[in-house]
Amino acid sequence: AHATAVDGGLGLQDAVTPVMHDIISFHNMLLVIITSIVILVAVLLAIVILRFNSRANPTPSKTTHNTLLEVAWTVLPVMILVVIAIPSFRLLYKEVVVPEADMTVKAVGYQWYWG
Image (cartoon, rainbow, N blue to C red; front, side):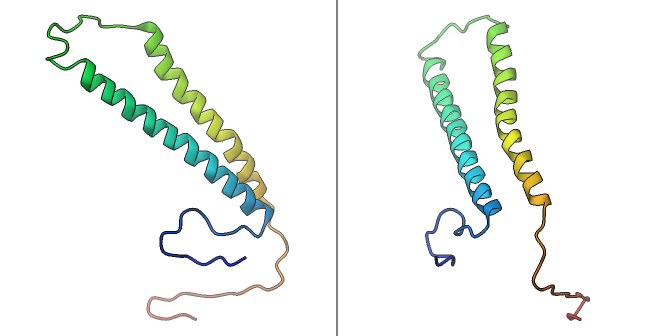
């Protein structure tokens, strides 16, 4: 497996460790969730622009509250964050276990040179 950056490359480099495989899976899951949210917001914005402009709706609604809608746009983001947080914390705890190193490199950085 060759893992160098290439022009037009998308995604992460090839995984070597089990933790990196999990990081890539988490990244791909987040990509799907975030893309879905962006598409949903763009579609809702387009609907609002087209349906509720002054030409399509000359007399605006006087509605001030919609309890179901307010609960939905409070609970849905919380549920999305929980769906993201659970695998995130699992991955974080997997990263805590650091395997024994074969070699240790110590580098000291000074203001104008390396020591």
